[in-house]
Image 1 (cartoon, rainbow, N blue to C red):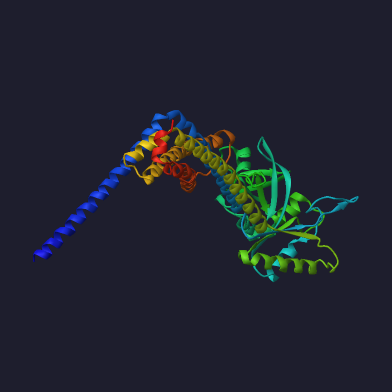
Image 2: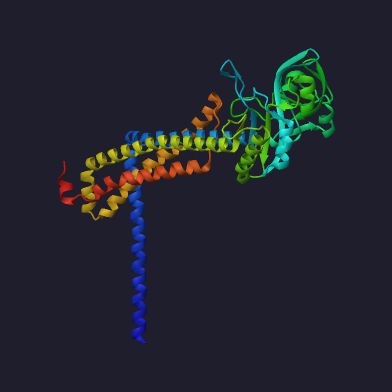
Length: 434
């Protein structure tokens, strides 16, 4: 029994000794941290100047990522407004004296082509013929020059136009050539101001049209074009009474929406083969039409904006690395200046690991303080760029965490060598150092 009691006492003593060691270790870390902060406070000006590189680097990263992300989101929004899975079929370019006049100037597409595509081509969800011209529009004593587009109702779904008030075209209105119009927000503002435009009569050229619908605002396109500065009328009405085309039934463009991303290429291939067949184009002859795959264009633009964001972030990251080099240089100078202090600490029992941890804490604090100040300046700078330069920005929590994390890594990474060098000093040589 005495043996077991003695064994129990021995275990209790060993536990107490272990707990005391842990407490001592905790106290040591607290004292090391306190000494590191005191050292930074003693040299306030140098600490501030040392952190300046990190401040500039982090603020640059925040601003660059905000601008890059904002631009990407703006482009994505514009692409969404244009519509997805789109194919734009345009008539060919006419030639005059050897000069090419541009796409759509040669009337090769017809409404019958659109009907054939809808009936025979795979992967087509919806399509709409479309022709547009610039016309002078009047209401009372107000007038406005705008784009007038003749089309059918599927065009609104294809291009993501939504009707805010009123209604769309009825099928019989298109076939009968009814004089009805759906107008955009810009046209409504210029002609009617704050007055409700519905059921009002406007004149396109000299032809009266009743306003039956008002579109929701879409804003500018990726090319800077105002998508709300437009009037839509039935395609048959446009051809017979407004545009006065010399080739009845022809259209400038056919807009096609594929069933999915995967079906875009299939639809494009089928449309190409069908139109070549209908237009009697030989194997060696060029197409008298052009098909633009907007999905490919959208992916290309997204890739470009993503690459731009990464480039901006990389450029800003260089500033952080430069700031880290500045921290390492100052910490090396600090090791040299405090050689005697290090020797005294080692002589009274400080371990090499204690010295190393102290210098690492100092470099880490310098970096993190600079990082926090840099985040504040970066966020403020991004909002100033948005306010005064009109740039699109998007500040995310991920960009802030990334900047602070990178800042902490810079402090530890570039502070390790000076800390390691300080921990290798011989106490006797350090005490003799003058």
